[in-house]
Length: 431
Image (cartoon, rainbow, N blue to C red; front, side, top):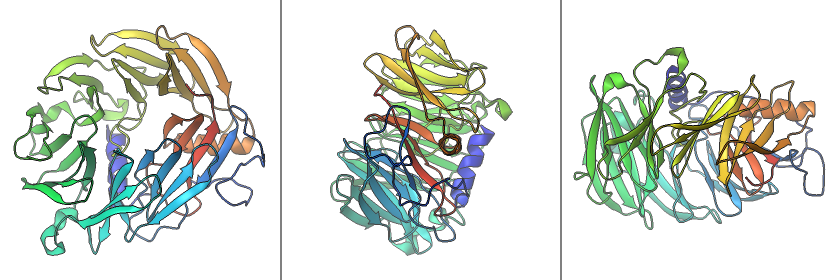
């Protein structure tokens, strides 16, 4: 849990230098192998570095979204769309201020980011992901009304968070929340609340708000974006139960530290009744799990994947599958005992699990049956030293996505220079 908290605090403070790609000096994005034909399975298809050197201060690169053919990536002062197959840049949208928040989901091919306006994170911009045009541009409020809790230098642990749900964009911060129409940016509702240490949210099937107020309570609400003061349901957890993070809203699954924390990074997974917010089932912590951070504001919990009634969890040398209706383990897939095995995507009865590269060993994708965990096929990645190095550096801090025949290792954290990695795309069969 402490690792997750450090990640969030570093992001709020303005990000950090991650790495620099090893490259041949050619323009980006590119095929590192110089091939003019489609790359074979396991080869590096293309890579993209940070497009601009961020100004001093906010250096966040939060926000990744997809259309049927594009991966769209937010950086400190630009949003860029790349063709998933080729890496060709399709459009760029220059931001008028430093990026400070981003919706963790898109809806109807629209995503929303927040950028700095003066000293405050309060300028919302809705962007059409298909062509990069601005759908609307609005300020949360007048700058004189913003106060300290929208100022990165003063908001402490918790900056603003954005979520999309049912045609609305929801913004929450330490002492307030607001909804707007996703279509035109017009304000729908706004509500003040007592200043809290932390505020978080997730959208999609439901709109969930989480606030950490006082020393004893964590409050969860399922919100109606039109009536913020009348939640569909509200529940609370004891503060000593630890921090929570929304993994999925369909079904509604949380990660919850059972109050032990420390270096073990202990988390249970809790399935909530979507109608009442009450606990339905719980998947208890397992010592084999290796989850990474569970507090990335646009990615949920790295190493955990929910698909319908199943939960897949990354482990040391294993991927473990659980039944979310009972909380019981279904099967364990054993892989390389010395490396974490990360569940990445489910398609046509197969789970793709990612075994990251190291400086000495190539990475790979293992495809296993969702029914019994037996391996169907293995795709080894490039064994070139440069490719191993780039993949291993990206794999340390990214959330892998398998989309349209590409394993995408994407930086959803911060950048320090224009040599930092944004996206590394590896050719992969669809799961």
